[in-house]
Image (cartoon, rainbow, N blue to C red; front, side, top):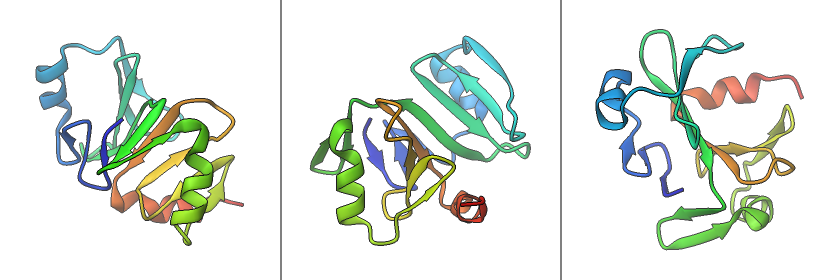
Length: 129
């Protein structure tokens, strides 16, 4: 996964629409509304989640290696990297959340990383600890 925090994931900007994704990637293997009321486009290796108003909220994909600019972080080292490089990192609902890098992941669920839009960080902070 190549991440420019809050800007783009693997070349896909956070201001993309669902229609643009369908045009770019075709019809997803699965789509629908999830338990937290986000619309999902699931392409198997990557899931895009949108608010009901169409704004992209998060992108989850398998990321054995996370690329942040010139830095490449293997998933196995990601928790240590985040804790060392982001003093504002916090844990919620089993996820390690990094406001600096705009991501959330479950260190115990190998290789799945969620890139977050900046506007959704307050919701992650508000989750019960």
